[in-house]
Length: 538
Length: 64
Image (cartoon, rainbow over all chains, first blue to last red; front, top):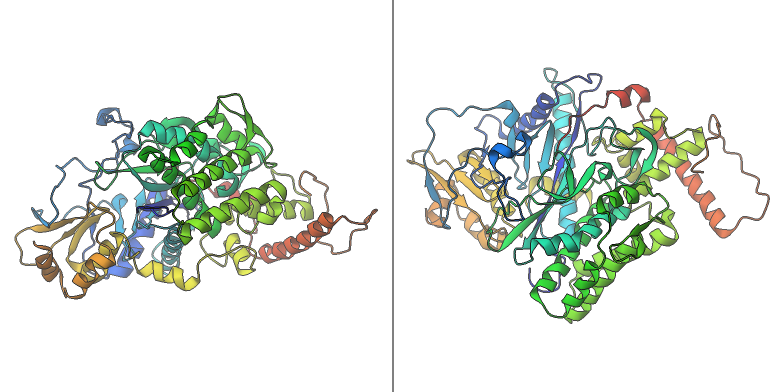
């Protein structure tokens, strides 16, 4: 990942809204586990299911450098199982095999997919955690793949008379006060001091919603005031920096589980974003954020980029939390936000400052940026310009504008006020994953939104992992040796080879190893897990 | 358009009389309105029939 580039290891974790039509009181955890279990049953017909390997999970580790006491943690933050000493070394490691059948908690339903993603139940929602990718376009591919994975579960449940019908929504609010997350994760050089990351990133995250927001009918956490706003998540942001994700949600989240060498990497966990159906919105959300992180990394490394980064550090807002809400509620994009240094700039002007700083740093590098980087920079600039002059022209790329266009049309045609339930229904049904019901999908079918990937691309991404991260090894191992895998996680695969004394755990501490280039040939000449492990030195 | 809540039931296609010659942006806006109307017809068929019940029943538990 050296040089001038938007490339970095990243991914998107999406909790889907879950509903049993006509049964508002249905147990959402049970529905969610059906979503996961029906998928697992279909794919793995009969053979044992790989567990999630929690060995390296550490959700209580805080990027600010301290460790939250388990006793002080809100129970929802405990996503790992009791601590086991972390493994070291690179080859397969022997692990004791547990006696008898492991108890399967239905709430712990969990599948590792052949595309390297994880499908599981998080709290009361089915969650798709995408495999690690390295470009914003791949982020779009494997995020869209998640929609198809969810759709497949909806179809299988609908086809099965014994199981409840379920509908799934790729959104973040229910309009009654509940929110559920779409988290981005980015691997960032550990050398960037966390305080610099917060200083450089906060104003960017506050203002990027002008092109990343999915749009929402209703103002306030419970939608208590009629109206429309840019973002689904904005009204639930209540703190500047913090570890929590389920209460007092912060602009910059400090959860720091790198799932990689912690001396080299931190894994920045961004929880402020919306789930987006529009491909250009997802693409630019990941692409621009990755570029700002690159800028901050370059500044830490010293050299010419430092001056560019200092520009963005001067963009500190006087009240960032209030600014999140104000930007989201400002459909005219003209609201001025007060900076610590006394200036008053709009969200678009602040974004333009970030874009200029990135451009300045790119120029300072001298080397030509790669195509992926150039494309993100060009689209970012074009959108900021058109959002300032003719926002209606952005409705094919910016989700809140695409949604607002439909809602305003309905308001004009049918004379509806913002508190009319049909408008709220449009907002919810927008993200229904069924193409025949989801309103986004109707717009896409009518050619009213821009598409970046083909249906074939997405279908391939459902089956196959990205080739340039360790997700390749994880996904291919599940596809090829699934019956001999007892568990897997972001940074390990645990094999259970019949006739051997112990389990064999293959650690994958480096997200950029286990790629097709590294292990493709090895996998091709290993007909079973035993030969693979022998080749790996186990 | 936005911000006005005049009740106009049904969907009529009669051209709007303009008192003054439309500025280029107004013509663009009209073209966009026509495009949106076509999209609305597209979604009228799939939108939940009982919007109020659907919205009321959409209750989720908080997540991350």
